[in-house]
Each structure stands twice: as structure tokens, then as C-alpha cells.
Image (tube, rainbow, N blue to C red; front, side, top):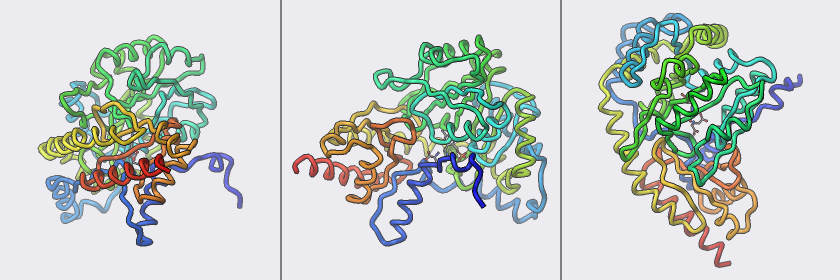
Length: 396
Ligand code: PMP
Ligand code: GLU
């Protein structure tokens, strides 16, 4: 039987594909350094795993919960957002999902009719585009400029806005660039969105991961009108080293959340029950492990950034958040005789065993992404190998 047109057109996730390829090489006995995924190399903090264990030991896992999540979990999400965002949501304004990825999926399914447009600043995280298209919407790319640290401006957004525009995606701190928008920049974009009655999809998943004194501003904290036009997407994967637990959530206008709850109810029933118990502890329990992980990411960033910037033909600004470095490697590609960054990334993997992610899937044909959510010695060894590779090529 043939697959649907929709599935034939759907691209696989390049981040997951790059990791799978590297893992397959590793399993075949190759010496591979994995700098692919945004997957913290820490174990989930003990207070969180203990909460899950208590739920398991007391048999609290043998039932479905409400599709939107248990009342105690919704309360924990509300308290968390009150503490970290200074915004008070009601119970019917939040929903727990299987990862932030599924929150985004449910959101686009909820808000988009065929050919509705979603403005997506480039470079973008790989799944936005495919998820918009799965909901029959149209992804409209908005240019940003490296000289302006890849930050999208109201002028560029306005250039791409048509009467079909329904939403705009913001991701600060960003994957893959690591940039963080200031409060003023967010206010400009927020007011423009309100004026044009656009929904802001604010993907805040890296919100707690900011470094060197940089501050994260939740766009919803800027005004009530902006908050009324925003759906916050967030999750535990990055902040609490919980990628495997698959917990995400959304907060926003009642009607949109109700639509998302219907999708959750029909697609997954509810977020895994044991994960819900772990999530309550993560969201409202002791936060000291988050601070410790953040300090470690900051230390790695400060030590690794100059080394990556010193690789011949690599150029990048110092990021302020998330845990990625996203150098422009156009000059290195030229030195090594590559026109295509995916081929360049493939050659690095083949020749050096260093697994990176091509910028092509992020809408950036001259960049590649390196994740430092992995042991520093591994990243340092990777940098040595890539440096040798690029230097070796230019001497040929
Ligand atoms: N948004 C961004 C920008 C991401 O990088 C990721 C990566 N995992 C997600 C959302 C989804 O996260 P998860 O599904 O693990 O919560
Ligand atoms: N978001 C992470 C990344 O970009 C994990 C993989 C994925 O969900 O795409 O590496």
C-alpha cells in the first residue's frame, strides 16, 4: 500500500537522523564523537527520579489521567510559570504534552486551516516547518542577518506578512544559533503581532539556559495584550536533563488550549503518568541542580567558543544561551573544495569521526551545528580533529 502524499512530502528530522547515523557507526565499532543532539549529558536530578520512583512503588501508574494532565501537574505548571515568568495562568490555560515537540504539533493542528501562513525566522529549528506543513499550513521564511546576530526585525517580518498570516514563531534562546532576544526587541515584535492579530508561538524551551549575565525575558511577561496573543511552549528536556521522559507543556488562550487538549486526547490520551509525577517535582521542587548544570554549560561555552572560532574558516559570534555553536563555515568549505554544507559535514564525519549537524535543515546553507551538551573532553577532541581536517585539506 502506498503512503499518503502528506507522508511522502514529510522530511525526517535531520537532528535525529544525524544522531542515528552516528550511533550506527559507533555500533559498527567506529570511533565517533557525537556532537549532534541537544541532549544534556547529565543524569536527571535525583529529587526528580525519586519522585518517579515513589509513584512507581506506590502503584500510582496504572491509570490514564485527564488528557490535559493531572490537576496536581497543571497546578505545578501554573506555579512554575508564576515564579519564573511572573504571569498567572488558569487551569484551563495549560496542557501537558509528550514533549514540547508534541505541544507544537498539537498547536499547529489546532490553529491552522489549509494555506494559513506561519512566519518562521531563519535559521529555524528543524521541526517547525514540517509540523506546519503537516497541519496543511504554509511555512513562510523570514530573513535574518548574521551581522545582526540572526535576530529577526519587525521590518523583515512585515515584508513577509500577507493576509493569510496567522502566527509567528519565536525561539529565544534559540536553537541552533544560541541568540537571546532582549526585552525591547521582544516588545517590538510582540506589539507588531498584536497590531496585526497574529498568534506568537513562543518556544521557550531553552529559557533557563542563559549565560554570562544574559537575561531571558518571557515575551508573555511584557504586557497582557501580548500574553493574550501568545502560546508559550516549554518542556523539561533541556533544563532538567529529561529528554527521555518526554514532558512538554503549553500555556495560552483558553480556546487554543482546549483545541490542543482534544488532539492530546485523541492522539496520545495523556502524558505518561509516571512522568507526570516526576514533572511535578521538577517544576516546583529543588532547583539547585538546574543552577549547577547551567554553570557547567556556561563554563564549557566560555572555554570552547574561542577554540571553535579559531578553526580556520569558521566564523561565529559568541552565543548567549541554549547549548549549541553554529559557525559559518563557508570559508572552510571553500578551502576544502566543498560547495554543499551537508557534503562537508558528511566528509568531516567520514574522515574524522566527528558527528555534527548540517545547517541545511535549519535553513542555513553555510553553517553547521555543534552541541556542547556533551562532555567537554569529547568536544575538545572533536575540535582538534576538525582543525586538523581543515588544515590538512588547505595544504593539499
Ligand atoms: N523546541 C526546540 C527549539 C528544540 O530544540 C527542541 C528539541 N528537543 C524542542 C522544541 C522539543 O523538545 P522536547 O520534545 O524534547 O520537549
Ligand atoms: N531538539 C534537539 C536538537 O535539535 C533534539 C532533537 C530533536 O528533537 O530534533 O538536537
